[in-house]
Image 1 (cartoon, rainbow, N blue to C red):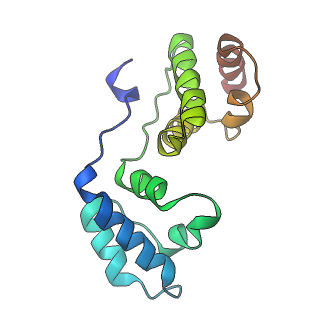
Image 2: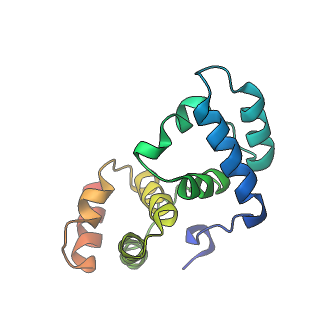
Length: 142
């Protein structure tokens, strides 16, 4: 797998602090978490809004959200090969089974950006063979 496709390492030492900030932001009224958002930006190097963390518990857990917040934005890799697509689909499917939601979300976002397809998970979760899925992704992205 080429370097651009590798899952980025996150600073596990920052995880507790990021979780605490996300929880604090989520507990505040909209528009009142400026200090916490600044602290979060200092830890992650990314700018966020309080809306991103509002009621996060309705769609994910705190650990997953903190890991995604620490990870850099997935790159756009417009020249993905069929073999790379097979590997990425396998990774996403494996993450889905093993509970590594943060990695699954990261790679799903990478595919969305790289292929300009909003419905990547429709393909990945189709139940078809990964080779077939990769081919369909390539066709849909053309």
